Image 1 (tube, helix red, strand yellow):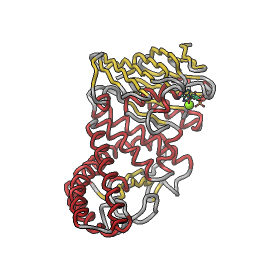
Image 2: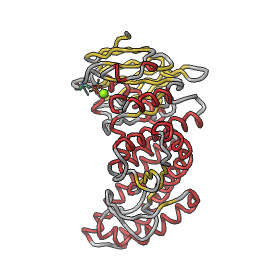
Image 3: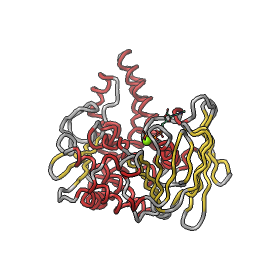
Image 4: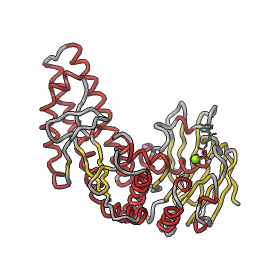
Length: 387
Ligand SMILES: Nc1ncnc2c1ncn2[C@@H]1O[C@H](COP(=O)(O)OP(=O)(O)OP(=O)(O)O)[C@@H](O)[C@H]1O
Ligand SMILES: [Mg+2]
């Protein structure tokens, strides 16, 4: 698939921007702070209902405007789809697909697939578990838009359960509070297990693509592996960010997840009542990114970490093209060429050049290999012009 046309009204610093993209490679160039990332962020938002820069959509609306509009015309294999996503500060957001109003925002998922690689992605490799959970969940939602609902349901139940645990802690645990807790537990296990299981399955499917992508970009024989460190296993309970040895959950245990969940939940019940917080579940799990035998976090060099992050995104793109019926996802490379050495730049160019559409941003056009300069746009003060 590819984005044919993008309209932005009052989106970030774009008051009224029209861009006709081409299939193949599109390059957006311009000085810092002119609105390049803002353009690709709009496509990312329609694609995943999230941004790699902020949580929530309020910052996406132009300062002093009451709402923003992103309109995308996307070419699928045999037809075009027009998506209108209206983000409003006060009123509910609105979605239209081919002019028909669609009540649920999450139904926008699947209209355009994209994979964004940006400098912030180094955090997936180097920083805390929440970055890795966001990586996997953002991808998960593209494969299975329904999971967006499951994730919100899980978060809602988690919040309510935490409130109940807090109340139980401050008032002393009473019989009725405990039976309400049992009811919440069932919902928690249902939604939570589904998240854990779909994450596991996704990791299994991305594996071969990751190995291939890493070797293509880094040209070393170090094998990347992803393991799922799960709070559902073992006897330990850990805080997020804590480097404790948790056990790994494997694909062979997929069917057992709800049982493991139930068992562990009952074994930590007293601790949860003591602490007033839910101690296990997908919100406490982590992915361990191994390079050879060592975790990339804390061991990999800066260059290796970059290659790893890039390989995760390239592998995501490969898996999306392999499993979706609408062709390749749009590959977005936001400001990444400046960070790479010449060898990696050329290898990256070679890897993405054949994708149906690639959208690249760069402050310095010379950082981008010349094979990736087919269609060039200049971005200046929120205005975009084809060169
Ligand atoms: N909600 C908003 N309303 C108005 N302006 C905004 C809003 N959000 C961001 N901006 C402005 O957009 C500009 C940043 O745009 P963007 O991040 O797209 O820059 P860029 O061209 O990618 O720059 P760089 O090369 O540094 O990455 C900043 O000047 C910022 O103040
Ligand atoms: Mg930028």
